[in-house]
Amino acid sequence: MSEFIFFLFKVNFIYMEKEIVFEGKKLFYRINGSGKPVILLHGFGETGNVWDHQVAYLSSSFKLIVPDLPGSGSSEMPDDLSMENLAEAIHAIIHEENIDACPVIGHSMGGYVALALTAHYYNHVSALGLFHSTAYADTDEKKTTRRKGIDFIRQHGAFDFLQTSSPNLFSPHTKETNPALIKTFIDGLSSFTPDALTGYYEGMIERPDRTDVLTGTHSPVLFVIGEHDNAISPKDVLKQVHLPDRSFIHVLKQSGHMGMLEEKEKSNELLKEFLAFGK
Image (cartoon, rainbow, N blue to C red; front, side, top):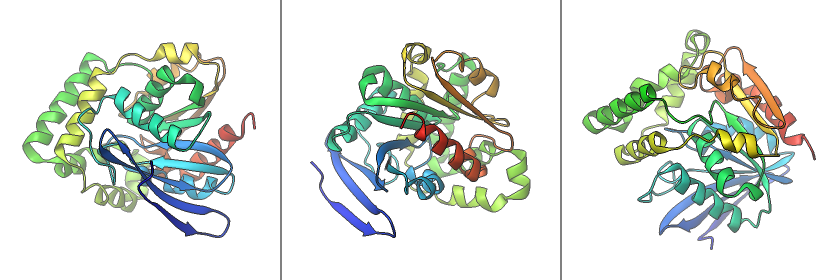
């Protein structure tokens, strides 16, 4: 049951902030716009605000449901931060909002959550979006990198880690032409706790390969790839795009791992095109 609903009336839609209880903890999400529901999931070291440009653009056509994943932003942290349990949190929102099925778009770690949700509740996911994300499990090399990150977080804290690692998420073009964007992004990351970030990393290390989700789904799948992405290999993502029955593939030429910020207009347009498919 919702603990509170906050309404803010705008020109053509209602903006709501909502809370439900998930595993005894507060789970916060926002609703913008009206129409077909769409869930947008943020990634590691982010909050739902990372989608603000897309929400502003799409809310005249769709009902955008944007959670802060458990442990991020205004949502409290449960004991279990596995991708499966984060997917259970999203399923709780789907149940709360009486949604039969809707598109679910996930950025990076949010894509892993969307894949886990599809694996367990495929009937609730009418379309799947992997925005700078992958169905592959971590390689041994990636697991080693994450474990080094866990050690750094435990020694130096969450914000020091995010300050150090976040610039690498952006393309050389963005670093050169829009350093203020990177600074603004990093300035908004001060609320994360070490336990949340290390819990996410451990959850990502343990997640299984989900390519069977791509081969098994009959729903359309969106792949958004950053040509300069250092976090998710563009070559690895391109190896997966043939697996679903219907794939929508976009390569953002001037983006690293943060296309919704780096090329926001293109991201807006490709999302609107994908979400309008099959209306």
